[in-house]
Amino acid sequence: MILLVNPRATRPKNRRFPLSVMAIGAALPAHVNWEIVDGNRPGVDVLAEVSRHVDDADRRGDPVQVVAFTVMPGPQLVNAVPLTREVKARHPHITTVWGGNFPSLYVAPVLSAPYVDWAIRGQGEDTFVDLLEVLDGTRDPKAVAGLCFRENDGTHWLGDERRWKGPDELPEPPYHKIRVADYLRPTFLGRRSGVYQSSIGCPYGCKFCGVISVFGSRERQQAPARTETHLRFLVREHGMDSVHFYDNNFFVREDHARELAERIMSLELRWWCEARVDALARYSDDTWRLLKRAGLTMVFCGAEAGSDAVLEKMNKGTTTEQILAVASRSREHGIIPEFSFVFGDPDDPEREIDNTLAFIRTLKGVNPAMELITYFYTPTPQRRGTYGDVDALSGTPDTLEEWVTPAWVAWMTHEDPLVPWMDRRLKAKVEDFEMVLKSRYPSVQDTKTAPWGRMLGRLLARRRWEAAEYGDPRVLRTVRRLAQRKPDDTQAYGHLRAAVAMASNGSDA
Image (cartoon, rainbow, N blue to C red; front, top):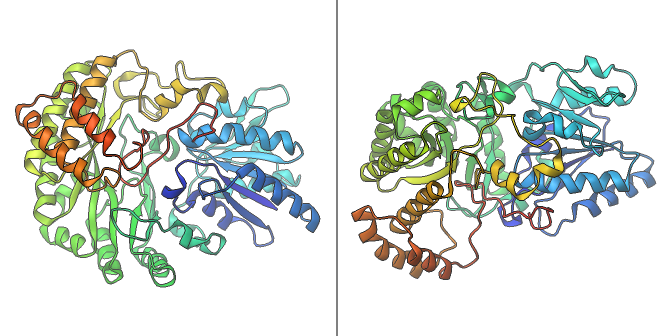
């Protein structure tokens, strides 16, 4: 028996399909029994659930051999550390495995934790299957690509990079292993929103992004026919009415985008996806109209900066002219653009912030429906250097216990990175601007603020926005606080990926 654990990463009301552990389970040989334990489901005590499975499996004569955890940086890491430690303490004979983005980016602290036996870097489906052969004694662990472990002398063995597969080479999603209806949740897109991923990787090389450190500058897209089949099943059998595509870069080729749009149009789904501004800027008006008819409601684009010089330094491969063009064309075709910006150029943060805030004002003038997502730059490991020539690994924690302290959680989530080039005054400048903008132009995704608060905020922010006065908007913050149906979630990352505020012990994450 294998247990695949998805540690809690979000509030239960924001739960989504546990795609990563579903993919691992789907790849397991037919004779292997496996179950998913999802900490994001309401009322789930993951430790108790794991122990229950262990006891039940022992009684059946099919003992749990491995408990495997998928771990993303941020809220999920905060929960995964104490959870894995406790699982190992209760069941020391069971093998523990970590996979996912965190061990793929920062494998050394994972292998330094005595409660983690094995780590998997990169795509994990085939590596995990090979690991089961290692545990059976029929395979040499050093011959398994992507597998990492501690040697007897305490040193770390890092397996070679594994050739990864595209979606069409992987098994069908095992929806029968989860209660699908439990994961179809209300969002601004619809009453029964789901998630789906139809591609892996990204072909670009932005220097601030950790995706290329896991997959390289490569992307493999799934055939539109296969995507249609899976979505049609979820619509027909489970009533899904909207979908958030988790692809790092949903649109690469225009012909692919057109075929997919034509195939899913009859499903009448409203959907959200991520895309590059240079790709969208090249699309014909006919393609834009087709995407709109197919249900595209909002598109997330990494605008990142308001300066062509900074975009070039990031190796973004896009221009401010293209960003403005997408803002204009999305307005013309009735699709909401969601632009993210990364603040905190290590070389000249104040100048970059001023340029970018001015550029966002320009974007709002081009398309008032534009939605803003802000991040503060923190380095991640890169294959070809980092944005601003910052050594991404220098000074990062050596232990998982340090990684989950509040300061490093804030660093991981870009919420409050304690980097030497970004002082509190500059951070406050960005936050004050964002408060004025989002009060003047409330987000279509803001379901927490009462209607009276949204209306009052719009009125109070009008003069400030028109006069470009953003400093210390305490009245707007007070209105937002009083009008909240529930307290603000400080880890709301934008789009549909809301995550929770975290305590360093993981008790409230």
